[in-house]
Length: 459
Ligand code: 5GP
Ligand code: MG
Image (cartoon, rainbow, N blue to C red; front, side, top):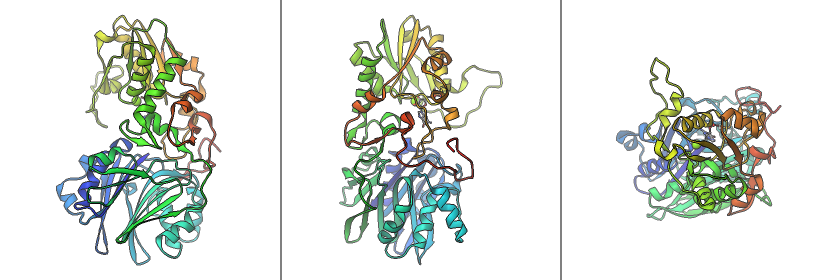
């Protein structure tokens, strides 16, 4: 997962992009970068870390111009190292080009092998670099080149590309990842993965970049082009609604917060808990669904777990062992809300089950009479190859364990998930979703070989 942001024709484009990236920080915390254009030059700055730590005044001052693209990264392909940070900038065909990518290509391995056999030298281990080599080998304008090469590229891509005199936004024909266009107060277009980034820069959302659309911006204005034929139905990532997107965003034509509440209401109807005293969320990802559950069930909603927003990536563990140390940094029970109560705890999803197990233990230690876990999506059984970093199926607890066995592992009094129909019924907006993580129905063939040569579990 990643987030992309771009602005055209605004004063202080680097600072506006810095703010926009803040509004997308939840989509990637590993690295952040901004590339601006002025004259016939591109200016780039990227580092490992979060937006606020990566940039300071002098870094932003060194990014001149009224045009910029930016990226926050959560690695799916390629290692988490600064060389793989984005936007990725190169020189080719006598000009400079920078690219920011949210998504994951499923045939990057094959394309890369083919390009290397033909003499291309790759600088990174990112699938994104494949675009650059393909574009460099094609002929014509940037849009011509994109129209020639994109039909060969499979998988998920929401892209922003910047050259000194134009910006291009592209969304793959399946529309796996969100990408919207808004309008800055200055009148210039703003592109962002989610609307959460627009509010911060006082831009107004206008529309989504359509699946399979190329939007090109230059000094003369905006034009729209197609990448191949349109598909009858897109395959928008349903997990964006469940977990990834920010609840104050609108994606795929629906309000994420409302979708999550509808999911919670449906879950309450499908999987009620008799004698429940209190419904609590696992914050923040379970909050909206838990609220919907509590409202539908008519059971009091309480914040029984408080999340620390200051738990960083690195911390010093005491040398004498403290049980479940990692989760204690992040979550802490409000004991009097839990004690002697039958607790329904709602979370968005279970991946490995290791955190959920610690949460159940924490609630028991806080004195819960019973702990019933409710999950706002079906069991996550299959890895994602379209841009969400789900672990291999071997690590996905639901791929190797029944719901009852997971309940035993978690030590929950009961465990229940939302049904797949319940999920689809709860999601509004533009129809057409990818639900492969639950159903295994992959709309684009999944790769046989991963980039670094690792064989995936799906061969
Ligand atoms: P688990 O019990 O599987 O260890 O952890 C469940 C938690 O992982 C849930 O609260 C959920 O919000 C979170 N989660 C779900 N999907 C992802 C993901 O793709 N990346 C990360 N970092 N966390 C996730
Ligand atoms: Mg969570």
